[in-house]
Length: 187
Image (cartoon, rainbow, N blue to C red; front, side, top):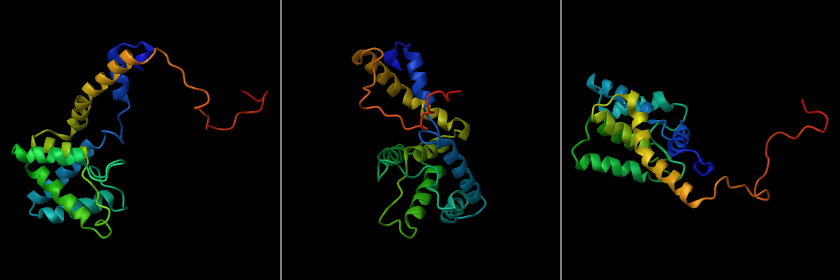
């Protein structure tokens, strides 16, 4: 986008618009899930039982619960580090505590010993934000704010190092859509 000559704000906005359910979109869902578990705990349900209830409700069909798993990493380096920092800074409270229990319960399930499901950054951000008193409505927004410097750096780098309006090598590009209509059938 930046090499097209667009202003930096447009290039950054284009990068931000690419965020969605598969990248930066789970924080609010995790925060709401953790709130449910904390309400259960406040009603006298132990953390372990609250974690099991949440897992049954949110991934009873075998789906990955929000805040866990990563397409690239087998261990969540960012999530683990954020949780460690929250602990070191004495910022971890009920949300972080419950999230750690959920992680332990998930990874104690049959078959998980060989393939543990890592806590991801969305899960860690959600827990820390919850413990800081933020509501779920702003969780995804905080993720966006944290990504803007990287988007800006990427746009500046592209403007400085790439030729404007670069072309795609026809030998490396291929069409994989529906078959082309025979000549004369175009509508």
